[in-house]
Length: 385
Image (cartoon, rainbow, N blue to C red; front, top):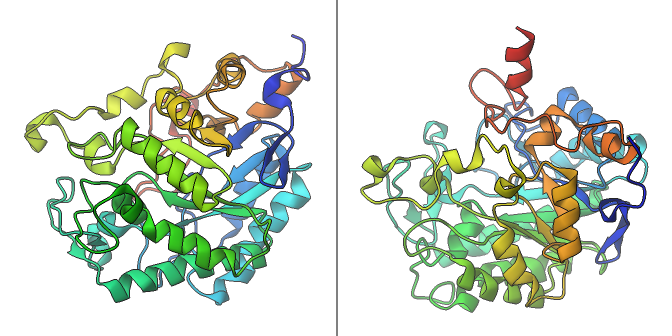
């Protein structure tokens, strides 16, 4: 099978002043492989080394906690104070040493209302809106606490550069704290951080502006956002387009387009009392090209309105589908997560023509971390058994 050296997927691309060798991105994947204190482990370093060797142009790490109290789960990497810089720098250094021209970003996150119940930490949010997943109401943040969150994220951006990363990404999707500020469902504040789209995005503007002052002018700061929350009264595509325009205008160097909140994708219609738009079955068992790129429509509409690169994620696992998305101009880069858990060398296989057009990943979602261990492809383990 001939290689794809002339494919648009393997053409260089720019995000700000950062040049990527191809248009393939490893989307952030919570690996749950740090120590209980949030320190980087050999297992994490090895994971990113293998990814870098696999040929992807850009790697975005799994969540790194910016707040000293909050994490999305056990064994989550921390960047909440300067003592963690040395540890996370091992990941950046390993990627640069192992992957030819491979770039890596540190993703920054705060769980907000999705704080794990067994953490013993009180969940916080913009507003006290009942959470159907956890069956609880989070405490609304005070203005002083919002300023503290902004400061934590800004220093996370600084620490990412000091640790040798090529850039950073704020996680403002999937219902985490920054996502809940953007959503009209979960943000019902009546002060300067609520109400209009611009006010709900204010926290992101202030994080960007404060963080930008702490790093080089050309240090890339990206953001991940929802096109739809899939919850009544939440973000829809029309609202996402407004938000995308705002974020691009603020200065974010690229927008990664995703969707959904945990509240929407983990409870049945009977449990919620209303019919969710998206259930887990929509994201598992992807078998055809038409099922891939399930956030394509939102990406297309946002791309019409912004002049920064769009990274599209969501069930993508076929090289010909990636080429189609890029050629249509619906996205500038395509991101994958689960396929690269099973086949971290998939980009190199596609480039050389040695691999199948579609990833071996069966979209079963069983790679999510559990009490039994960190993120890994369990479908391979079952097959081997």
